[in-house]
Image (cartoon, rainbow, N blue to C red):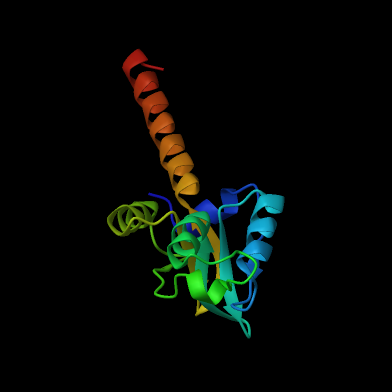
Length: 144
């Protein structure tokens, strides 16, 4: 089983994009479209205070019957966060994401944000592990 640290090292892109709570939904949506990402962390004074996703935009802005121009991230973000550390396993992260219906997990190291793990990252990692195991078993069966 790999750790979150190992998964983050294997990612092709590790840059974390963030917005402030006062950012408008429109500004955040444009940033997400430009960077081709599905979530942004919300930072205030260098501290992680939330996360906002495409689903938040669709569900919460529509539910509030508000304009993306006038609604701030603070009004639609998730502030009750589930986070993981560099030492947590891919299995633990997958279980947490499945049970809590999450697609992104902020990664903290000593209370500091160091990464963002997506369900895609975990699926890619677990698939690679399974392919490797299958390859080794096939080699073993062939006697190689």
